[in-house]
Length: 188
Image (cartoon, rainbow, N blue to C red; front, side):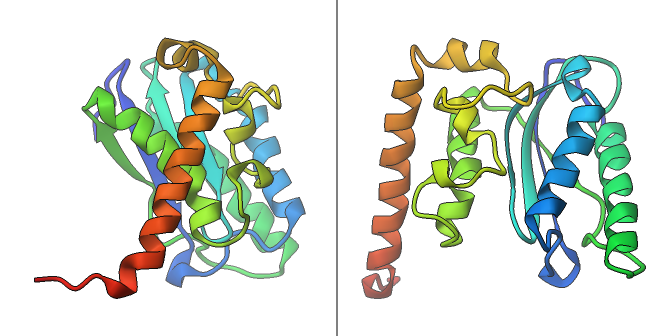
């Protein structure tokens, strides 16, 4: 894939055979330290991210000529080596290479942010996205300060953190309501 400067990409991957890629809180923290040490904000804007037990999502904006794939490979190859050493294992951890999806529609960006941050709720890990500390949702609602969050992007789309929090609550409730009625919906 050719990465365009200014382009937005949904980058995701999951564990081989859908297995866990994080066994403990320390594993999440290890990856977040690696991400921070790599200083992605120098070449990319991290719009949204969520680390899940067996997969991850990033919404990233390219802002240099260094491809996002170089950064992903650097961070996650180091993580895999550390993970394998920690758990005395060998071989691949991920299903394959990270999958980058170019986002070409502006109105899809916010929907993708909502989707990414709702992952822990949809997986029944928490009841509210704010309870999951391995995403940048808390930055999106102004409850934590972290460099893995693009405030410029945020304030181009929202007037306040409260506006986003209300939108997220509506999205989460809508998804939960849909899950409740799914068994009663018959396709024609």
